[in-house]
Image 1 (cartoon, one colour):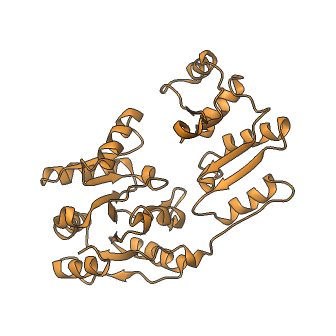
Image 2 (cartoon, helix red, strand yellow):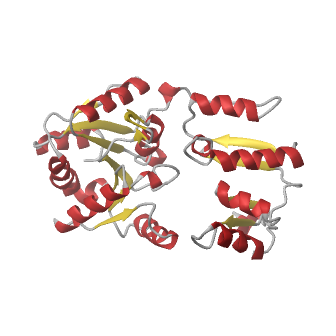
Length: 316
C-alpha cells in the first residue's frame, strides 16, 4: 500500500533468540524508528520503547490485533498492558483499537476498564459467527491409527480436487509424529510449529501459499490471521483445548481454526477426528457453545460416507 500512498512502515522484530542482556544490547544499537506505521509483537515493541528507539509522543493510534490473545493471561497481557500504560502517561489522546474474531467476557471487561471515557463497541452476535460456507463434520475413530487412516484413505485421496488442506494438531510432538507417519506412507506434506526458526516458517508458508505443497500440518501457530483462498479443507486431528484446563475446549481457537477453510466466500469442509470419551465430551461442549449440532460421518471406514460429506460441502 505504501508504494501508492507514500506511507512508510517498519516491521519491528528481533534478530534472533538470546538472553535478556543480548536482547537489550540489540535494541540499543538499532536506529530510532521513524516510520509512520510500526508492526510488531508486544514484547519487541516494549523493548524498543524502553530503549528510547520508539517515541510515543506523537502516536495517534494503537491497534491490538487478535486482542483476545494479546490480553489473555497466558498470552501477551503483561507487555500489552505495559505499552498501554506508557501511552496513557505520555499521550492520553492516542486512539486504542481492539480487533479480534472472538472476544471472551474477561477481555471485554478488561477493555472497558482500560479504554476510559466514551468508547464504541461493535460485536457480531455469537450465532452469526458460524461460517455458512463451511460444513463441519465429526468422525469417531477407535484409535490414533484410525485417525491416520481417515486422513490417508478417506480425505487426502481426493487430492487437488478439493484444494489445499491444513491439519491442526495440539502439540509440536504431535506435529512431528504425524508428519513422519504421512511421509512414510508416501504423502508429501510440510509442517510448521513454534520451534522452527522464523526464516524456516516463512519459507514453509510461502511454499504453501504458492501452491507448491498441498498439505500443511500446523499447531495453532496458523489458527489466526492466516489467509489462503485455496484452503478448502481443515482437519482437526486434535481438538483445541485450554492450556490450563485440558478437559475444556478452547472455543475461540476452534472458531479461528475452521475459519482457515472457505475464505472469501469459497466452499469448505472441516473434519473433527474424535478418539474416545474425552474427545466426545469436548466436541459436545463446542456444539453447545455455538448452539449448533455438527453432523457426524456415520462410519470412518466407509469411503462413500466421506464422498457424501464432501459433496454436501460443495467440494466434489
